[in-house]
Length: 328
Image 1 (cartoon, rainbow, N blue to C red):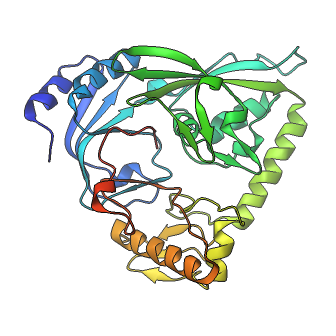
Image 2: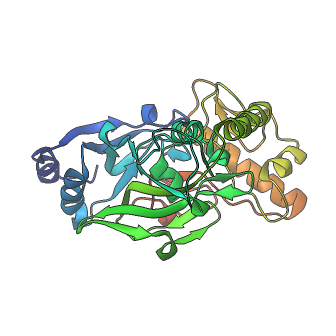
């Protein structure tokens, strides 16, 4: 793979980092497919991250991996360096000591590695509203910002105040208004990694907030596959309605390719039945896209990020191998 031994040695020499060569990536994704990275480096703090990004600033392909949701890795692997934030990026600061009235929003700083559902639950129990929509969205806070994760008519763009970004030059806080947000995307500066997020949350009654949490979680349990290996939604919702409805109308629920299946619960979810490959998953995505376009003249666009190769309907030059604009 295209990573030199000198670069590996330089990464290993960094204080606060650990490096693995030919690192399997499937265990780090929720779908559980894909090959190896040329190298995987974990960093313990922003200083180590900036130093690593400096080393990788020579044109080496790299990618920052979060909780591994909304991500698909090529079976051939990734010919670059995968960067991962370690557990020291799992934190939140500024939570009220007890629920109570407050004038205006409460600002809470959260490490990018923190799992979004966990923070949503802790915030709700502390009487902070605004993240109810996120209580069932898997993934890290950093990844949720980078993909502008959302559900039930709300998204991260509405509750984020500032984003801390690291790149090869250093670390800085960027106001939400200086970032470009769109449906399931936040356009981060090239070469930047989300390291922390400041949320502006509204004080409220913890009992009422958690009641909304329970309602949303019950709805998700009824409408989403549970206890299976999946990366989440395969395609973004088109303007004409939910992608899952178009796929279901095409009669594709339960269709299999190899070890992968289109969920029988929600047609926009692909499930690893135990021995799926990324090729199996991509074959199903291609079929879903083709059949929906044929039946309804609707062209589905992927929500999942693909690393190390291209989608079957793209040219080979579209493979995602350069520095990305997101975590996953």
